[in-house]
Length: 125
Image (cartoon, rainbow, N blue to C red; front, top):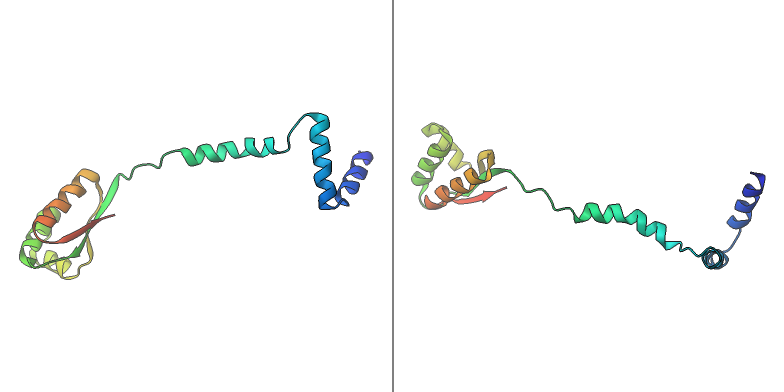
C-alpha cells in the first residue's frame, strides 16, 4: 500500500504534458484506451436522452380573448362549465382566465372548438 501512495504522489507532481505522455504510454503497453470508460459511462446518459418524452394527458383550456360576440362566449362557457350566468360573465370579463383545468385532450379540443365557434380566442396548456 505504501508503494501505491508513493506512486500517486509521484504522478501528482507530473506536469500536464508529462501526464498526457504517461497515459499514452500506458495505453500502448496495456492495449487499452482511456476514452473507453468515458464512452461507457456516457451510454446510459445517451439512452436516457433518446427516450421519447411522455405525451401530455391533461390540459388546461384558457380563454385568451373574448372577441366581438361576448354573449355567445358567455353561453359557451356556461355550457362547458355549468357555471351560473353571473359566474360565467365574470369569468369572460376577467379574460385571460382558465375555463377548464386538468381535462383530457379530447375534451380540451372539443372545448377549444366550441369556444372558437363562439368567437373567442382560446389556448391549451
